[in-house]
Length: 275
Image (cartoon, rainbow, N blue to C red; front, side):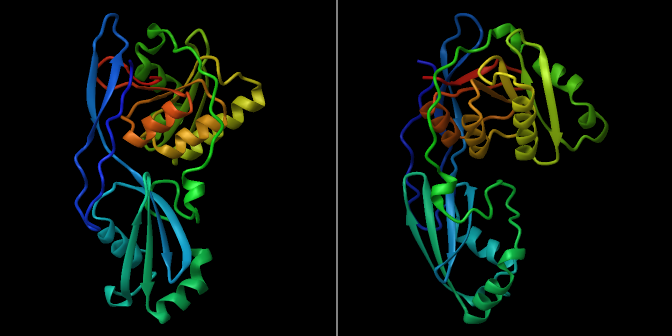
């Protein structure tokens, strides 16, 4: 077995601290390597409504949820002060949490007047989504694809640096790259947003008629859940990330038969999916 996720931990108290990382099994690409375990962070989809009006869904760590809602409400100018938050009711699901927030009439009317101008700032890429069904969508599972040969991942970071032209000069851009069946970098797209970089790559691949099932795709950013969504919709065979995935990311990759590999800085590549 390559990857196993232990049962999820209940959130418990409404404002409980973040749970301990969960252990996830993986296998290194080294020949004869044993199955090992790594502690990965948890994440859930949090939907927030104000006085019954759906406002946003974002991916968050499942801890201190009430603190996040209070801070989000103040920092996004939904309320002027915590005095305008009258109540917070949390409903927990398997991979999500619904927060129903009651705020003052003044704040609610101001929110309705300005909600179109509100921009999400959590950095998760899902702010502004107004339904949990969109944050945790039903996706068509892929046909399993073979893993890329181990030698195609050797020196990957150096090869990415060579291909990432703008990133070398600015130091502030994410990149998404596709490597062909022979391990050669075919396309590289860069952007300040990790989701934008992957969208650019998907568009370029489809425009060029590149088979997404052949070879592998690399993201230089954190492998967040929404990147898994994009990879599955684009019918990728293998997604490689330079940052560790979360538990939920691994679960979704396994569920949809997407190969998921993490390439750490100093260790051999880790296969988290398939099982």
